[in-house]
Length: 329
Figure 1 (tube, rainbow, N blue to C red):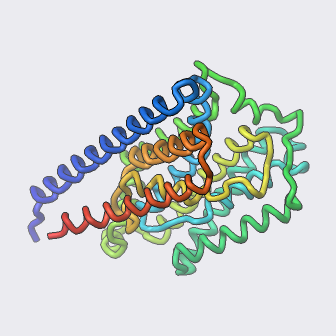
Figure 2 (cartoon, helix red, strand yellow; figure 1 turned 90 degrees about the vertical axis):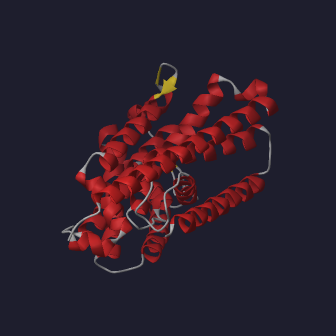
Figure 3 (cartoon, rainbow, N blue to C red; figure 1 turned 135 degrees about the horizontal axis):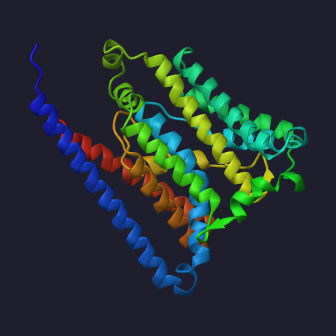
């Protein structure tokens, strides 16, 4: 059977141009928000401390967004990321874990996050549960386990483990180390998604699981790996939030899953899977973080902020559906 390579190349080029256009639109939105900040709060917005605050907030949610991008491109969704991060932070800050030092705390957070993500992957891949249900169950269970371990109390990082806190306090060129960790995760995620077989298989599984299976891809195993990767990112995010707050708490990461999903959608990733970019997700994240910052600087109500974010998500999904209809033959 003859394959239409010319048509495939044309479609790929067109999709690449469409992605570039979307990225330019997101950059324009960021510039517009920055102008709003300069006009409404010129003395507070354009300061080094505010910039650091924006980047620090974006770093924690951003690491989770990287994992979420992989999962959604692969055709799934993960509602448990915030709860997994909270559970990892609590587990890593128990007195028993802290007695082994900061390195063991960090490893513990990563292992707990990856393990919880692996459970999600097993439930979805081999348990045949719908991703929404499987990760919703993990959300409830992980948050409950975090509350049980901490007895609903905030656990402080002890004096001998200040190396964790120094990720937030130590600055290089005026920027906290945790922002550099976030940047490293983004770069590694981009390479994994765009320059490896794992990334190509992720697009294939999300676009058409049956075709991917016929092409020789172990769809179940790959899906399980995607959720484990999301859990790994939650573990890293737990380290960052422990550094920022000097605590482990069962309340960490509340609604982070919604912020991460929203950032991915705004960035152009299809909820049905098979299409999306990590660059778009990060730009979407920065837009949401900047909106949050502007609301805080202008003393606006948190409820209004949530309403604005909800409207942005609805508009983004409607635009996605419209674009899909226009591309349909």
